[in-house]
Amino acid sequence: MKDLAGRTAVVTGAASGIGLALSERFVAAGMSVVMADIEEEVLAREAMRLESDGAAVLGVLTDVRDPAAVEALRDQALSVHGSVHVLCNNAGVGPAGPMAETTAADWRWTVDVNILGVAHGVIAFTQLFLDQREGHIVNTASEAGLVTNPALGMYCATKHAVVGMTEALWREVHPQGVGVSVLCPNLVDTKIFESERNRTDGVEMSPGAAATMAPLREIIGVMGIPAASVAERVHDAIVGDRFWVLTHDMTLPAAGCRFEDLSAGRNPSDPYAGGVDRPTN
Ligand SMILES: NC(=O)c1ccc[n+]([C@@H]2O[C@H](COP(=O)([O-])OP(=O)(O)OC[C@H]3O[C@@H](n4cnc5c(N)ncnc54)[C@H](O)[C@@H]3O)[C@@H](O)[C@H]2O)c1
Image (spheres, rainbow, N blue to C red):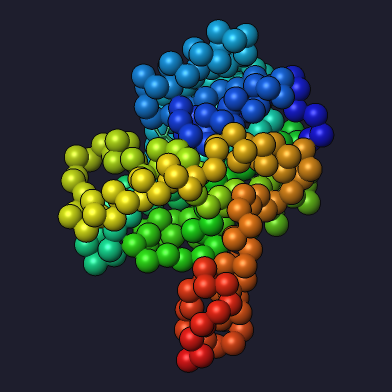
């Protein structure tokens, strides 16, 4: 799809951060945008803000953990706009903390949003795009889907799943004219480390998780790149039909380090050590 003007995008996790920036970028490209999120008030406010600037925007309260809700999102988008051309499965949560302190409830929440939430979008929209012989699916993973970090075990596990699912999807549908991209950002200045606000099971963070999250919240505000720059890269990947969407120079060397360890039969070394002081075990 070289020209997005006049077409329709559906974005999940659209009320905040990267999803909001994607919605704004698509509006700037002349698209109609269906913004889906679990945060009702913020979603309504942001959709109204974009609409009052003249954009064709619709906010749809959607919990991506619920497959029926994602199907209803697709049906609503189709009934309003007639067709959908771009789907961004972007909603996600970012819990952190030592793996030994995680609970089954923590895993369930993280897997439900970060893996199944993406899968529900893939299930609801892929056949539509295949029938149209046109469409582009962007799944938001993370650099944590290409490398691993201590204290981000659940997050890494779910984001690796998103990369794997998305690459397999590309192999299946790209030959039939459907575009697929995987977004793998490093730190972006958003509310991802305040994801507990999106948790509905009432389970509190463990002390270790709380101690891990606090500095992460500070670091992301200082080191995080603007979400708008990520949205620009996603836009360019869609029109340029590119699978990998990376946002930081450090990502490729870090991911490469893992494959070097693998081919050398080495235990995992520090992906951010830049090739220096790797263990030789
Ligand atoms: N910010 C970063 O540094 C970073 C880096 C790599 C990947 N990501 C990924 O980017 C995506 C967007 O996150 P962000 O950084 O913009 O954070 P954010 O918290 O600002 O936005 C996430 C949005 O997802 C929504 N959401 C959460 N659970 C949901 C659910 N069950 N159903 C529907 N919506 C739900 C939230 O309400 C929120 O609006 C996530 O998948 C995240 O893992 C972020």
